[in-house]
Length: 524
Ligand code: SIN
Image 1 (tube, rainbow, N blue to C red):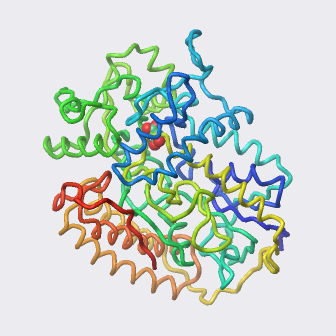
Image 2: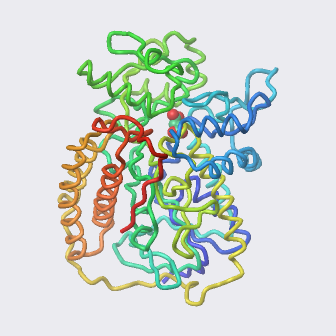
Image 3: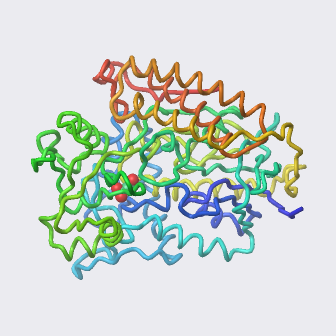
């Protein structure tokens, strides 16, 4: 049996989890659970960058206002101000760690790093590492995490449930690679498990989370908020035979145009910000155009920009597309919206604390109020960093209060059932779930579709829950059960919101409601 003196357990090894581990490891022993394969989660696939007020030509109030505008009346102003005001500190911390941000090639620039633009931002404020910011960020943080003696990294445990009693969260129940069940106890547990884009068929990253962290927290008593606001990134590469691949909003930030299949630029007639309108508006416009023209994509055109600029600024995207037989410097890119980011999640405060004592949530799994009804581009990596730092400050203070019985090695638990459910059956049920969500709970919704989704998901959820209770513990079966139950909550939230706002657009109530908006709240 392995010895794991964990007083702090972090579940999830994306930007939020790694940043928190690094911030805390000098103070208390940290156990960090992250998937063995780096292509899991969303952080690694982020291309654009991190939004922060860094240029002397920009200002904090402008970033706050742009975030509030994108959030369509549902942001928590306190959370927005808190996040934006801590932006520079988060970027300076990364620079100290050696993050390879792209330098500004213009010697007259007042800031040494290049700042790009993305949708909703009224200024250049997105700092980036070429077009692979997430990968560079994960590599930078992981480099330090792997060398820190206070951090125990496990890539062999997958969490299936949280442990709790009357005093709060006690850690997590996990499966190892051999399918054995373990209890990992910890004084404090932090979920940094990502969002719920995996509830949909088409996503911008290959292995997104399916909301398992949200559901585990809900089962322990946490409130979930704003689940109906699922963001679809407007431009994923349309490549039916290839892997999901994001085409960064920074291409539009640097001058790319969206065109119909017959070459007409359609965004200027929809919004004065044209291609740089917030994402909900651009994704809906593309969806509408695809329906109007019965097409399965639109074009993103970079061919009017100098080829060397496109290749220099977007080497990852250029290289990927060349590998798929497309030269983006002389041909337009076929693009389609795809599920990208969950604006809702576990209700948490400005230190990441949830309703359940000793349980914290940071990053995409959390609802902090920053994003409101529609996240502005590149605010999410900022949120990961700012809330990791804030949670670390709070958890440092809690380090001197150990909880008896929580600082122990993993305990192997004998399972109640040993019969395994066939993987094909689990995969087919997950596919059914994703089909329902994509058909009825996507970019444009209507009452009848939401009603059908609700009935079909209730049946699927009951079936998967019963199967889970009667079979050997299995990671795919646990994920299916959690995804099905979360999907029913997403649909419930969407049905309860009798208006269209931000990312939630319902043809049967297509305007804002007249009364002031509130976040939706779900509990199990
Ligand atoms: C992008 O590069 O377009 C993604 C950035 C984000 O989702 O914030």
